[in-house]
Length: 534
Ligand code: FAD
Ligand code: SIN
Image 1 (tube, rainbow, N blue to C red):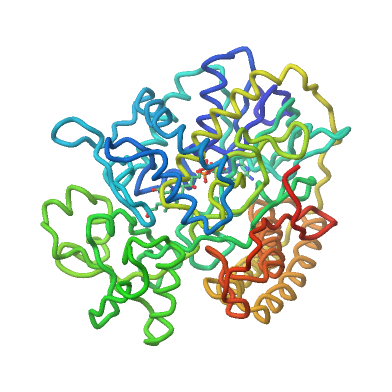
Image 2: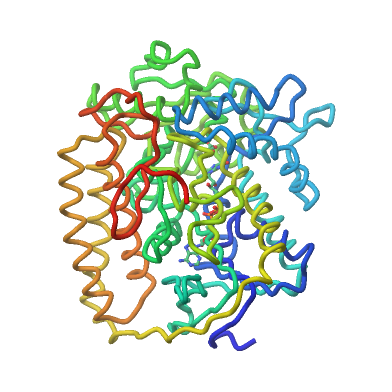
Protein backbone atom coordinates (compact mmCIF):
# COMPACT_ATOMS: atom_id res chain seq x y z
CA UNK A 1 0.00 0.00 0.00
CA UNK A 2 1.05 3.61 -0.53
CA UNK A 3 1.66 4.57 3.09
CA UNK A 4 1.45 8.31 2.49
CA UNK A 5 -1.93 8.20 0.74
CA UNK A 6 -5.46 8.58 2.06
CA UNK A 7 -6.95 5.24 3.11
CA UNK A 8 -10.33 3.53 3.17
CA UNK A 9 -10.84 0.66 5.59
CA UNK A 10 -13.80 -1.13 7.15
CA UNK A 11 -12.38 -0.81 10.65
CA UNK A 12 -9.99 1.88 11.86
CA UNK A 13 -8.42 1.14 15.26
CA UNK A 14 -6.48 3.93 16.93
CA UNK A 15 -4.00 2.56 19.49
CA UNK A 16 -1.89 -0.55 20.00
CA UNK A 17 -2.23 -1.40 23.70
CA UNK A 18 -4.04 -4.44 25.03
CA UNK A 19 -7.40 -3.01 23.89
CA UNK A 20 -6.49 -2.15 20.28
CA UNK A 21 -4.41 -5.27 19.62
CA UNK A 22 -6.97 -7.64 21.14
CA UNK A 23 -9.72 -6.04 19.07
CA UNK A 24 -7.79 -6.44 15.81
CA UNK A 25 -7.02 -10.09 16.61
CA UNK A 26 -10.56 -10.93 17.73
CA UNK A 27 -12.20 -9.50 14.60
CA UNK A 28 -9.64 -10.99 12.26
CA UNK A 29 -9.94 -14.44 13.85
CA UNK A 30 -13.60 -14.76 12.84
CA UNK A 31 -14.12 -12.25 10.01
CA UNK A 32 -10.87 -11.96 8.03
CA UNK A 33 -12.98 -10.32 5.27
CA UNK A 34 -13.27 -7.14 7.40
CA UNK A 35 -10.38 -4.87 6.44
CA UNK A 36 -8.52 -3.45 9.44
CA UNK A 37 -6.03 -0.61 9.73
CA UNK A 38 -4.52 -0.08 13.17
CA UNK A 39 -2.66 3.22 13.59
CA UNK A 40 -0.42 3.91 16.52
CA UNK A 41 1.51 7.01 17.34
CA UNK A 42 4.86 5.50 18.22
CA UNK A 43 6.25 1.97 17.81
CA UNK A 44 3.58 -0.73 18.08
CA UNK A 45 4.82 -1.89 21.50
CA UNK A 46 4.74 1.57 23.07
CA UNK A 47 1.65 1.79 25.28
CA UNK A 48 0.72 1.87 28.97
CA UNK A 49 0.11 -1.85 28.58
CA UNK A 50 3.82 -2.50 28.12
CA UNK A 51 4.60 -1.06 31.57
CA UNK A 52 1.98 -2.98 33.57
CA UNK A 53 3.71 -4.86 36.34
CA UNK A 54 1.30 -6.42 38.85
CA UNK A 55 -0.86 -8.42 36.44
CA UNK A 56 -4.44 -9.14 35.47
CA UNK A 57 -7.11 -9.83 38.07
CA UNK A 58 -9.41 -12.79 37.69
CA UNK A 59 -11.18 -15.33 39.86
CA UNK A 60 -8.93 -18.37 39.45
CA UNK A 61 -8.28 -19.71 42.95
CA UNK A 62 -10.71 -22.29 44.32
CA UNK A 63 -11.19 -20.31 47.51
CA UNK A 64 -12.07 -17.14 45.54
CA UNK A 65 -15.48 -16.28 44.07
CA UNK A 66 -17.04 -13.87 41.56
CA UNK A 67 -19.04 -12.42 44.46
CA UNK A 68 -15.85 -11.52 46.33
CA UNK A 69 -14.12 -9.93 43.29
CA UNK A 70 -17.33 -8.01 42.48
CA UNK A 71 -17.59 -6.82 46.10
CA UNK A 72 -13.94 -5.66 46.20
CA UNK A 73 -14.46 -3.76 42.92
CA UNK A 74 -17.62 -2.09 44.24
CA UNK A 75 -15.99 -1.14 47.55
CA UNK A 76 -12.93 0.37 45.82
CA UNK A 77 -15.31 2.23 43.44
CA UNK A 78 -16.83 4.08 46.43
CA UNK A 79 -20.47 3.81 45.41
CA UNK A 80 -20.10 4.87 41.80
CA UNK A 81 -19.60 1.56 39.98
CA UNK A 82 -22.49 0.23 37.90
CA UNK A 83 -23.02 -3.16 39.46
CA UNK A 84 -24.36 -4.80 36.30
CA UNK A 85 -21.28 -3.61 34.41
CA UNK A 86 -18.91 -4.86 37.13
CA UNK A 87 -20.57 -8.28 36.98
CA UNK A 88 -20.02 -8.49 33.22
CA UNK A 89 -16.30 -7.75 33.47
CA UNK A 90 -15.54 -9.89 36.50
CA UNK A 91 -17.36 -12.93 35.13
CA UNK A 92 -15.35 -12.64 31.88
CA UNK A 93 -12.05 -12.83 33.85
CA UNK A 94 -11.30 -16.56 33.59
CA UNK A 95 -12.16 -16.60 29.84
CA UNK A 96 -9.86 -13.62 29.31
CA UNK A 97 -6.94 -15.27 31.07
CA UNK A 98 -7.57 -18.47 29.06
CA UNK A 99 -7.55 -16.52 25.80
CA UNK A 100 -4.23 -14.86 26.72
CA UNK A 101 -2.76 -18.27 27.56
CA UNK A 102 -4.03 -19.60 24.23
CA UNK A 103 -2.26 -16.79 22.38
CA UNK A 104 0.93 -17.66 24.31
CA UNK A 105 1.13 -15.68 27.57
CA UNK A 106 3.11 -17.77 30.00
CA UNK A 107 1.75 -16.76 33.41
CA UNK A 108 3.89 -17.74 36.42
CA UNK A 109 3.01 -21.14 37.87
CA UNK A 110 3.24 -22.67 41.33
CA UNK A 111 5.18 -25.87 42.02
CA UNK A 112 1.99 -27.88 41.40
CA UNK A 113 1.47 -26.18 38.01
CA UNK A 114 -1.38 -23.84 39.00
CA UNK A 115 -1.36 -20.15 37.98
CA UNK A 116 0.50 -18.30 40.74
CA UNK A 117 -1.68 -15.51 42.07
CA UNK A 118 -0.53 -12.21 43.55
CA UNK A 119 -2.49 -9.90 45.81
CA UNK A 120 -2.88 -6.12 45.50
CA UNK A 121 -4.59 -3.21 47.26
CA UNK A 122 -8.32 -3.58 47.87
CA UNK A 123 -8.38 -7.32 47.02
CA UNK A 124 -9.42 -9.65 49.82
CA UNK A 125 -8.08 -12.67 47.91
CA UNK A 126 -5.07 -13.57 45.79
CA UNK A 127 -6.35 -13.18 42.24
CA UNK A 128 -3.71 -11.39 40.15
CA UNK A 129 -2.23 -13.58 37.39
CA UNK A 130 1.20 -12.28 36.46
CA UNK A 131 4.43 -12.87 34.62
CA UNK A 132 7.03 -11.96 37.27
CA UNK A 133 6.81 -8.14 37.62
CA UNK A 134 6.56 -7.43 33.87
CA UNK A 135 3.13 -8.81 32.99
CA UNK A 136 2.24 -6.00 30.55
CA UNK A 137 5.38 -6.48 28.51
CA UNK A 138 4.78 -10.24 28.34
CA UNK A 139 1.18 -9.70 27.16
CA UNK A 140 2.16 -6.99 24.68
CA UNK A 141 4.87 -9.19 23.11
CA UNK A 142 2.48 -12.11 22.66
CA UNK A 143 -0.27 -9.96 21.12
CA UNK A 144 2.18 -8.30 18.74
CA UNK A 145 3.66 -11.65 17.67
CA UNK A 146 0.13 -12.91 16.97
CA UNK A 147 -0.74 -9.74 15.00
CA UNK A 148 2.37 -10.21 12.87
CA UNK A 149 1.15 -13.69 11.97
CA UNK A 150 -2.02 -12.18 10.43
CA UNK A 151 -0.99 -10.61 7.13
CA UNK A 152 -4.35 -9.00 6.57
CA UNK A 153 -4.16 -6.62 9.57
CA UNK A 154 -2.39 -3.44 8.46
CA UNK A 155 -0.35 -1.79 11.21
CA UNK A 156 0.86 1.77 10.69
CA UNK A 157 3.35 3.08 13.27
CA UNK A 158 4.25 6.73 13.84
CA UNK A 159 0.72 7.77 12.86
CA UNK A 160 -1.00 10.19 15.19
CA UNK A 161 -4.74 10.66 15.00
CA UNK A 162 -5.52 14.38 15.15
CA UNK A 163 -9.30 14.61 14.95
CA UNK A 164 -12.36 12.49 14.26
CA UNK A 165 -14.55 13.53 11.38
CA UNK A 166 -18.32 13.67 11.66
CA UNK A 167 -20.21 13.34 8.37
CA UNK A 168 -23.99 13.09 8.26
CA UNK A 169 -24.18 12.20 11.95
CA UNK A 170 -21.70 9.38 11.65
CA UNK A 171 -18.03 9.30 12.60
CA UNK A 172 -16.54 8.76 9.17
CA UNK A 173 -12.91 8.26 10.17
CA UNK A 174 -10.06 10.49 11.28
CA UNK A 175 -7.30 12.81 10.16
CA UNK A 176 -4.03 10.98 10.72
CA UNK A 177 -0.65 12.72 10.94
CA UNK A 178 2.23 10.71 9.50
CA UNK A 179 5.15 11.54 11.76
CA UNK A 180 7.63 10.17 9.18
CA UNK A 181 6.52 12.24 6.20
CA UNK A 182 4.82 15.03 8.24
CA UNK A 183 1.70 14.76 6.06
CA UNK A 184 -1.91 14.57 7.23
CA UNK A 185 -4.04 11.91 5.51
CA UNK A 186 -7.75 11.13 5.52
CA UNK A 187 -8.57 7.67 6.89
CA UNK A 188 -12.20 6.84 6.07
CA UNK A 189 -13.76 3.95 7.94
CA UNK A 190 -17.14 2.37 8.48
CA UNK A 191 -16.35 2.06 12.18
CA UNK A 192 -13.64 3.91 14.11
CA UNK A 193 -12.42 2.66 17.48
CA UNK A 194 -10.56 4.72 20.03
CA UNK A 195 -8.14 2.56 22.00
CA UNK A 196 -5.75 5.37 22.88
CA UNK A 197 -5.37 4.78 26.62
CA UNK A 198 -5.22 7.34 29.41
CA UNK A 199 -3.91 10.81 30.14
CA UNK A 200 -1.24 10.51 32.85
CA UNK A 201 0.97 12.98 30.99
CA UNK A 202 -1.40 15.77 31.97
CA UNK A 203 0.36 15.66 35.37
CA UNK A 204 3.99 16.51 36.06
CA UNK A 205 4.59 13.27 37.95
CA UNK A 206 3.15 10.12 36.45
CA UNK A 207 3.83 6.44 36.04
CA UNK A 208 2.67 6.70 32.43
CA UNK A 209 4.88 6.77 29.33
CA UNK A 210 4.88 9.75 26.94
CA UNK A 211 2.11 8.37 24.72
CA UNK A 212 -0.48 8.91 27.49
CA UNK A 213 -1.66 12.38 26.49
CA UNK A 214 -5.38 11.66 26.47
CA UNK A 215 -5.64 12.15 22.69
CA UNK A 216 -8.63 9.86 22.21
CA UNK A 217 -10.64 11.46 25.01
CA UNK A 218 -9.93 14.94 23.67
CA UNK A 219 -10.74 13.97 20.07
CA UNK A 220 -13.97 12.28 21.06
CA UNK A 221 -15.03 15.27 23.16
CA UNK A 222 -14.41 17.65 20.26
CA UNK A 223 -16.47 15.36 18.02
CA UNK A 224 -19.44 15.43 20.44
CA UNK A 225 -18.94 12.25 22.48
CA UNK A 226 -20.17 12.16 26.05
CA UNK A 227 -17.29 12.29 28.52
CA UNK A 228 -17.77 10.97 32.05
CA UNK A 229 -16.16 11.20 35.50
CA UNK A 230 -12.92 12.91 34.47
CA UNK A 231 -12.36 14.23 38.00
CA UNK A 232 -11.32 10.74 39.04
CA UNK A 233 -7.60 10.45 38.36
CA UNK A 234 -6.01 7.58 40.21
CA UNK A 235 -2.72 8.34 41.93
CA UNK A 236 -0.62 5.21 42.41
CA UNK A 237 0.92 5.13 45.90
CA UNK A 238 4.35 3.81 45.05
CA UNK A 239 6.45 5.40 42.37
CA UNK A 240 10.21 5.51 42.83
CA UNK A 241 11.21 8.88 44.24
CA UNK A 242 14.11 10.43 42.38
CA UNK A 243 14.81 13.80 40.89
CA UNK A 244 14.10 12.71 37.32
CA UNK A 245 10.72 13.52 35.79
CA UNK A 246 10.26 9.97 34.50
CA UNK A 247 9.27 7.96 37.56
CA UNK A 248 9.34 4.20 37.85
CA UNK A 249 6.42 2.22 39.30
CA UNK A 250 6.94 -0.17 42.20
CA UNK A 251 4.13 -2.66 41.85
CA UNK A 252 1.49 -2.93 44.52
CA UNK A 253 2.10 -6.68 44.37
CA UNK A 254 5.19 -6.03 46.45
CA UNK A 255 2.88 -4.91 49.28
CA UNK A 256 0.82 -8.01 48.51
CA UNK A 257 3.92 -10.01 49.44
CA UNK A 258 4.32 -8.20 52.75
CA UNK A 259 6.23 -4.95 52.05
CA UNK A 260 5.42 -2.23 54.57
CA UNK A 261 5.12 1.54 54.28
CA UNK A 262 6.93 3.70 56.79
CA UNK A 263 7.89 7.30 57.37
CA UNK A 264 11.58 8.02 56.85
CA UNK A 265 12.19 7.36 60.55
CA UNK A 266 10.69 3.87 60.21
CA UNK A 267 7.18 4.47 61.66
CA UNK A 268 4.38 2.40 60.04
CA UNK A 269 1.50 4.76 59.32
CA UNK A 270 -1.18 2.65 57.57
CA UNK A 271 -2.08 0.66 60.66
CA UNK A 272 -4.47 3.23 62.11
CA UNK A 273 -5.94 4.21 58.77
CA UNK A 274 -7.54 1.09 57.27
CA UNK A 275 -8.12 -2.51 58.31
CA UNK A 276 -6.23 -3.69 55.19
CA UNK A 277 -3.26 -1.50 56.20
CA UNK A 278 -0.79 -1.29 53.25
CA UNK A 279 -3.30 -3.16 51.08
CA UNK A 280 -6.11 -0.63 51.50
CA UNK A 281 -7.62 0.70 48.21
CA UNK A 282 -5.23 2.94 46.32
CA UNK A 283 -6.93 6.28 46.93
CA UNK A 284 -6.66 5.72 50.69
CA UNK A 285 -2.99 4.71 50.60
CA UNK A 286 -2.04 7.60 48.26
CA UNK A 287 -3.80 10.15 50.46
CA UNK A 288 -2.18 8.71 53.58
CA UNK A 289 1.26 9.06 51.96
CA UNK A 290 0.45 12.58 50.79
CA UNK A 291 -0.61 13.49 54.36
CA UNK A 292 2.54 11.92 55.80
CA UNK A 293 4.74 13.86 53.38
CA UNK A 294 2.95 17.12 54.20
CA UNK A 295 3.05 16.45 57.95
CA UNK A 296 6.74 15.61 58.12
CA UNK A 297 7.90 18.08 55.47
CA UNK A 298 10.05 15.45 53.72
CA UNK A 299 9.79 14.58 50.03
CA UNK A 300 8.94 10.89 50.25
CA UNK A 301 8.12 7.88 52.41
CA UNK A 302 9.66 4.39 52.42
CA UNK A 303 8.51 1.02 51.12
CA UNK A 304 10.36 -1.87 52.69
CA UNK A 305 10.61 -5.52 51.61
CA UNK A 306 14.23 -5.99 52.71
CA UNK A 307 13.23 -8.30 55.58
CA UNK A 308 12.00 -10.99 53.13
CA UNK A 309 14.12 -13.80 51.75
CA UNK A 310 16.60 -12.28 49.28
CA UNK A 311 16.35 -15.03 46.65
CA UNK A 312 12.53 -14.91 46.75
CA UNK A 313 12.49 -11.13 46.23
CA UNK A 314 14.90 -11.38 43.29
CA UNK A 315 12.89 -14.19 41.68
CA UNK A 316 9.46 -12.60 42.19
CA UNK A 317 10.41 -8.98 41.30
CA UNK A 318 13.40 -9.28 38.94
CA UNK A 319 12.71 -6.10 36.93
CA UNK A 320 12.26 -3.92 39.99
CA UNK A 321 15.32 -5.49 41.66
CA UNK A 322 17.61 -4.87 38.68
CA UNK A 323 16.23 -1.41 37.77
CA UNK A 324 16.67 -0.16 41.32
CA UNK A 325 20.09 -1.75 41.68
CA UNK A 326 21.15 0.35 38.68
CA UNK A 327 19.96 3.37 40.66
CA UNK A 328 22.07 2.30 43.64
CA UNK A 329 19.22 0.80 45.70
CA UNK A 330 19.40 -2.87 46.73
CA UNK A 331 15.80 -3.69 47.67
CA UNK A 332 16.88 -6.86 49.48
CA UNK A 333 18.91 -4.73 51.90
CA UNK A 334 17.25 -1.33 52.16
CA UNK A 335 13.86 0.40 51.82
CA UNK A 336 12.76 2.13 48.61
CA UNK A 337 12.00 5.88 48.61
CA UNK A 338 8.56 6.35 47.06
CA UNK A 339 5.92 9.00 46.30
CA UNK A 340 2.45 8.82 44.73
CA UNK A 341 2.00 9.90 41.09
CA UNK A 342 -0.80 10.13 38.51
CA UNK A 343 -1.41 6.63 37.19
CA UNK A 344 -4.80 5.84 35.72
CA UNK A 345 -7.58 7.84 34.04
CA UNK A 346 -10.74 6.47 35.61
CA UNK A 347 -13.12 8.64 33.58
CA UNK A 348 -13.21 8.84 29.83
CA UNK A 349 -15.50 8.40 26.85
CA UNK A 350 -18.84 7.11 28.09
CA UNK A 351 -19.22 3.68 26.54
CA UNK A 352 -21.21 0.52 26.90
CA UNK A 353 -19.25 -2.63 27.79
CA UNK A 354 -18.85 -3.30 24.04
CA UNK A 355 -17.41 0.16 23.45
CA UNK A 356 -20.49 1.68 21.79
CA UNK A 357 -20.69 5.46 22.42
CA UNK A 358 -23.34 8.09 21.80
CA UNK A 359 -21.79 8.78 18.36
CA UNK A 360 -22.72 6.52 15.47
CA UNK A 361 -19.69 4.70 14.07
CA UNK A 362 -17.49 5.46 17.10
CA UNK A 363 -16.47 2.94 19.74
CA UNK A 364 -14.14 3.55 22.68
CA UNK A 365 -12.43 0.72 24.55
CA UNK A 366 -9.83 0.28 27.30
CA UNK A 367 -8.53 3.07 29.48
CA UNK A 368 -9.90 5.78 27.16
CA UNK A 369 -13.44 4.64 27.94
CA UNK A 370 -15.65 4.96 31.00
CA UNK A 371 -18.15 2.15 31.44
CA UNK A 372 -18.94 2.23 35.15
CA UNK A 373 -16.55 -0.63 35.96
CA UNK A 374 -14.25 1.48 38.12
CA UNK A 375 -16.69 3.92 39.71
CA UNK A 376 -14.74 6.56 41.62
CA UNK A 377 -11.60 4.48 42.09
CA UNK A 378 -10.26 1.55 40.06
CA UNK A 379 -9.42 -1.68 41.84
CA UNK A 380 -5.81 -2.71 41.14
CA UNK A 381 -5.25 -4.91 38.08
CA UNK A 382 -8.81 -4.54 36.83
CA UNK A 383 -7.71 -2.55 33.77
CA UNK A 384 -5.82 -5.12 31.72
CA UNK A 385 -8.99 -7.15 32.29
CA UNK A 386 -11.12 -4.20 31.14
CA UNK A 387 -9.10 -3.68 27.94
CA UNK A 388 -9.23 -7.30 26.96
CA UNK A 389 -12.92 -7.89 27.77
CA UNK A 390 -14.09 -4.71 26.05
CA UNK A 391 -12.06 -5.54 22.95
CA UNK A 392 -13.70 -8.96 22.60
CA UNK A 393 -17.16 -7.52 23.17
CA UNK A 394 -16.48 -4.72 20.69
CA UNK A 395 -15.33 -7.33 18.16
CA UNK A 396 -18.69 -9.11 18.47
CA UNK A 397 -20.58 -5.84 17.98
CA UNK A 398 -18.46 -4.90 14.95
CA UNK A 399 -18.77 -8.31 13.27
CA UNK A 400 -22.55 -8.23 13.63
CA UNK A 401 -23.12 -4.61 12.64
CA UNK A 402 -20.38 -3.33 10.36
CA UNK A 403 -22.23 -4.13 7.15
CA UNK A 404 -24.88 -1.54 8.05
CA UNK A 405 -22.30 1.26 8.07
CA UNK A 406 -21.18 3.19 4.97
CA UNK A 407 -18.02 4.99 3.89
CA UNK A 408 -18.20 8.78 3.76
CA UNK A 409 -15.55 10.85 2.05
CA UNK A 410 -14.47 14.05 3.77
CA UNK A 411 -12.52 17.25 3.07
CA UNK A 412 -8.73 17.32 3.24
CA UNK A 413 -7.00 18.70 6.33
CA UNK A 414 -5.70 22.26 5.88
CA UNK A 415 -2.34 22.90 7.52
CA UNK A 416 -0.77 26.23 8.49
CA UNK A 417 2.81 27.40 7.84
CA UNK A 418 5.92 25.80 9.26
CA UNK A 419 6.61 26.46 12.90
CA UNK A 420 9.63 28.69 13.70
CA UNK A 421 12.29 27.00 15.89
CA UNK A 422 12.03 29.69 18.59
CA UNK A 423 8.24 29.25 18.66
CA UNK A 424 8.75 25.53 19.23
CA UNK A 425 10.38 26.45 22.53
CA UNK A 426 7.16 28.13 23.62
CA UNK A 427 5.30 24.88 22.98
CA UNK A 428 7.71 23.09 25.32
CA UNK A 429 7.15 25.80 27.94
CA UNK A 430 3.38 25.44 27.63
CA UNK A 431 3.68 21.69 28.16
CA UNK A 432 5.74 22.17 31.32
CA UNK A 433 3.46 24.88 32.65
CA UNK A 434 0.32 22.83 32.18
CA UNK A 435 1.73 19.71 33.78
CA UNK A 436 3.09 21.67 36.75
CA UNK A 437 -0.17 23.50 37.39
CA UNK A 438 -2.17 20.26 37.20
CA UNK A 439 0.17 18.66 39.73
CA UNK A 440 0.09 21.67 42.07
CA UNK A 441 -3.60 22.59 41.85
CA UNK A 442 -5.46 19.46 40.75
CA UNK A 443 -3.53 16.73 42.60
CA UNK A 444 -4.34 14.28 45.37
CA UNK A 445 -5.98 16.86 47.69
CA UNK A 446 -7.96 19.62 45.97
CA UNK A 447 -9.74 22.83 46.96
CA UNK A 448 -12.22 24.93 45.00
CA UNK A 449 -9.86 27.91 45.09
CA UNK A 450 -7.01 25.91 43.57
CA UNK A 451 -9.29 24.35 40.95
CA UNK A 452 -10.53 27.80 39.91
CA UNK A 453 -6.96 29.01 39.67
CA UNK A 454 -6.12 26.03 37.46
CA UNK A 455 -9.20 26.69 35.31
CA UNK A 456 -8.17 30.31 34.63
CA UNK A 457 -4.63 29.28 33.65
CA UNK A 458 -5.86 26.49 31.42
CA UNK A 459 -8.05 29.03 29.58
CA UNK A 460 -5.00 31.15 28.79
CA UNK A 461 -3.04 28.11 27.63
CA UNK A 462 -5.94 26.95 25.51
CA UNK A 463 -6.07 30.32 23.73
CA UNK A 464 -2.34 30.25 23.05
CA UNK A 465 -2.44 26.67 21.80
CA UNK A 466 -5.34 27.35 19.48
CA UNK A 467 -3.45 30.28 18.00
CA UNK A 468 -0.41 28.11 17.38
CA UNK A 469 -2.53 25.26 16.25
CA UNK A 470 -4.24 27.12 13.49
CA UNK A 471 -1.33 29.37 12.57
CA UNK A 472 1.40 26.77 12.46
CA UNK A 473 2.17 23.49 10.84
CA UNK A 474 0.96 20.39 12.70
CA UNK A 475 3.60 18.65 14.78
CA UNK A 476 3.42 15.77 17.23
CA UNK A 477 4.08 18.13 20.15
CA UNK A 478 1.36 20.54 19.20
CA UNK A 479 -1.20 17.79 18.58
CA UNK A 480 -0.51 16.38 22.04
CA UNK A 481 -0.37 19.77 23.74
CA UNK A 482 -3.77 20.66 22.30
CA UNK A 483 -5.10 17.39 23.74
CA UNK A 484 -3.54 17.66 27.22
CA UNK A 485 -4.99 21.16 27.54
CA UNK A 486 -8.43 19.83 26.53
CA UNK A 487 -8.22 16.93 28.96
CA UNK A 488 -6.91 19.14 31.78
CA UNK A 489 -9.94 21.34 31.29
CA UNK A 490 -12.28 18.33 31.39
CA UNK A 491 -10.66 17.16 34.64
CA UNK A 492 -10.91 20.57 36.31
CA UNK A 493 -14.46 21.24 35.09
CA UNK A 494 -15.63 17.85 36.39
CA UNK A 495 -13.78 18.32 39.69
CA UNK A 496 -15.44 21.70 40.21
CA UNK A 497 -18.84 20.17 39.50
CA UNK A 498 -18.42 17.47 42.16
CA UNK A 499 -19.29 19.02 45.52
CA UNK A 500 -18.15 16.07 47.63
CA UNK A 501 -15.15 13.82 48.22
CA UNK A 502 -15.41 10.32 46.84
CA UNK A 503 -12.85 7.73 45.75
CA UNK A 504 -9.97 9.35 43.88
CA UNK A 505 -11.52 12.85 44.07
CA UNK A 506 -10.81 14.51 47.40
CA UNK A 507 -11.47 18.17 48.15
CA UNK A 508 -10.95 19.70 51.56
CA UNK A 509 -13.89 22.06 50.89
CA UNK A 510 -16.30 19.10 50.77
CA UNK A 511 -14.49 16.36 52.70
CA UNK A 512 -17.48 14.00 53.01
CA UNK A 513 -19.27 11.76 50.52
CA UNK A 514 -22.68 13.20 49.60
CA UNK A 515 -25.85 11.10 49.86
CA UNK A 516 -26.46 11.14 46.12
CA UNK A 517 -24.09 9.12 44.04
CA UNK A 518 -24.06 10.44 40.51
CA UNK A 519 -21.74 10.41 37.51
CA UNK A 520 -20.42 13.66 36.05
CA UNK A 521 -21.04 13.97 32.33
CA UNK A 522 -19.67 16.63 30.03
CA UNK A 523 -20.97 17.15 26.56
CA UNK A 524 -19.34 19.77 24.34
CA UNK A 525 -21.17 23.12 24.46
CA UNK A 526 -23.50 22.08 27.27
CA UNK A 527 -20.98 21.75 30.10
CA UNK A 528 -21.17 19.37 33.05
CA UNK A 529 -24.40 17.67 34.05
CA UNK A 530 -25.55 14.57 35.85
CA UNK A 531 -27.79 12.73 33.46
CA UNK A 532 -27.78 9.07 32.52
CA UNK A 533 -25.96 7.30 29.69
CA UNK A 534 -27.08 7.87 26.09
P1 FAD B 1 -2.60 1.70 26.19
O1 FAD B 1 -1.98 0.44 26.54
O2 FAD B 1 -2.10 2.93 26.85
O3 FAD B 1 -2.46 1.91 24.61
C1 FAD B 1 -2.82 3.12 24.01
C2 FAD B 1 -2.30 3.12 22.59
O4 FAD B 1 -2.83 4.22 21.88
C3 FAD B 1 -0.79 3.25 22.49
O5 FAD B 1 -0.35 2.37 21.48
C4 FAD B 1 -0.57 4.69 22.03
O6 FAD B 1 0.61 4.90 21.33
C5 FAD B 1 -1.78 4.87 21.14
N1 FAD B 1 -2.20 6.26 20.92
C6 FAD B 1 -2.49 7.19 21.85
N2 FAD B 1 -2.87 8.34 21.23
C7 FAD B 1 -2.83 8.10 19.91
C8 FAD B 1 -3.07 8.90 18.75
N3 FAD B 1 -3.46 10.18 18.84
N4 FAD B 1 -2.91 8.36 17.54
C9 FAD B 1 -2.50 7.06 17.41
N5 FAD B 1 -2.23 6.26 18.47
C10 FAD B 1 -2.40 6.78 19.70
N6 FAD B 1 -3.24 -2.35 34.86
C11 FAD B 1 -3.50 -3.60 35.32
O7 FAD B 1 -4.60 -4.11 35.15
N7 FAD B 1 -2.52 -4.31 35.94
C12 FAD B 1 -1.28 -3.79 36.16
O8 FAD B 1 -0.42 -4.46 36.71
C13 FAD B 1 -1.00 -2.47 35.72
N8 FAD B 1 0.20 -1.90 35.94
C14 FAD B 1 0.47 -0.68 35.39
C15 FAD B 1 1.75 -0.14 35.51
C16 FAD B 1 2.07 1.05 34.89
C17 FAD B 1 3.44 1.63 35.02
C18 FAD B 1 1.08 1.73 34.14
C19 FAD B 1 1.41 3.01 33.44
C20 FAD B 1 -0.20 1.21 34.04
C21 FAD B 1 -0.52 0.02 34.66
N9 FAD B 1 -1.79 -0.54 34.56
C22 FAD B 1 -2.03 -1.79 35.04
C23 FAD B 1 -2.82 0.12 33.77
C24 FAD B 1 -2.90 -0.57 32.39
O9 FAD B 1 -1.59 -0.83 31.95
C25 FAD B 1 -3.61 0.30 31.39
O10 FAD B 1 -4.81 0.80 31.90
C26 FAD B 1 -3.93 -0.51 30.13
O11 FAD B 1 -2.77 -1.15 29.67
C27 FAD B 1 -4.50 0.41 29.07
O12 FAD B 1 -4.61 -0.31 27.87
P2 FAD B 1 -5.17 0.41 26.59
O13 FAD B 1 -5.03 -0.55 25.47
O14 FAD B 1 -6.49 0.99 26.88
O15 FAD B 1 -4.19 1.67 26.38
C1 SIN C 1 0.73 -2.26 40.07
O1 SIN C 1 1.33 -3.25 39.67
O2 SIN C 1 0.82 -1.78 41.22
C2 SIN C 1 -0.20 -1.58 39.15
C3 SIN C 1 -1.43 -2.34 39.09
C4 SIN C 1 -2.50 -1.53 38.44
O3 SIN C 1 -2.33 -0.37 38.13
O4 SIN C 1 -3.58 -2.11 38.24
